[in-house]
Length: 157
Length: 350
Image 1 (cartoon, rainbow over the protein chains, first blue to last red):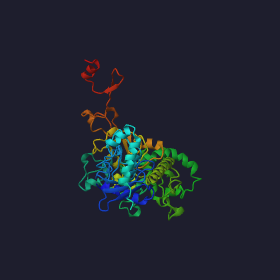
Image 2: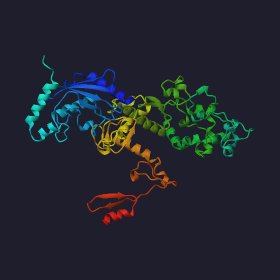
Image 3: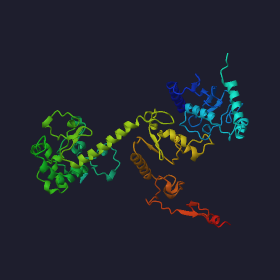
Image 4: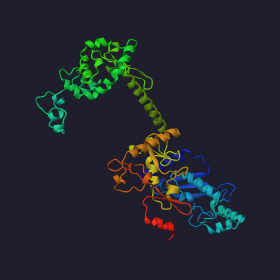
């Protein structure tokens, strides 16, 4: 408990220090609870998610960093490895391949990489996975693009 | 023969040795109040010492016998050094010539010493410069007596920058230089280690709040740095059942290379050789400790021959294991320690 708090505090300081280092990730900590974080990540370029801003919610267990943080998308996203309704993410480093050397910042980077390289063979979103597996890249791209436009882009006034 | 001196513990009514005590338990005997440190050459209390700083223990030859544990070093080196001194004493800036010592009060004790150890050649009352202790004031840089000091002023050690090399004790000099070099290397390594961070808690390992945590956990197969508590916690972590021990927990959190053991160390290393040295010292230390699972042959240690701890029986005999390799048809080899009948049945495919 104490060690997880200390470690999160270190990460917080690190995030404050390099705020501008990675313009695609904006990681913020809940002001009253250091075990709740949220992040805004920019959709990677040359993907259907380009131009979208996606919000992630982090729930950090007390045994962190021995246990991985629980991360989910708050913004709706059409992606084979993200549950369409709950926003749950299927990513090995958040499950059995977790390592305590990962930080929240690096988890964000891994999620951006996952958005750019979907893994249709272990889908949480079967519709999206099926589209990719059947080779319908155009269909997948347009669906993903549509949802990005609908959910992840700031509404034009 | 040492029965002459009254036992200090006996006078307080608390000598545990009783009849076996080498000192006298007879109130008629006199107690000795001579400072043993002074006798050996340097008492750090100096004039404030509550024991007597006398070089001559009067008639008590027995005192010398009792304190003979301090003698072997001197007497052993006397043979060699007499030759060294003869040739070098003229050249060295010896603060006071040996003859001036001959007249001082401190010259006496060396008769019986020499006689005790049968060093007949040294019976003519000459004090060997190698017997004169080094001046501790000069050692730290400032002796008020300057050249008239009764002690020898040591030569400068270039490593620790102290005047602590005895001009007439070559073996001691060598020893000092050796330990000084080792010390310096250690301090250097410690200085470098100060800046090394643990990749799990992101703290500087040697600046952790708890003293017990200020230690590195070195992985045998890679060079990533962790503190011992973090890496051990991670490796023994059973919170997440989906994490496999060999593919996740026992691998390095950074490079994922599998390491079978972690070596605790206060300093970090900067070369392969230093790492090997740390590992070897650690293993050697463990090998001197009896394995509590093996329990002198009464228990069973599941690590078998790979155990780092000592597997020895009560009589000091080491465990001797002949490993039996069972080969199966598909080329796999199984090591079986306790050979069971069923092992053979399995091969026969009954």
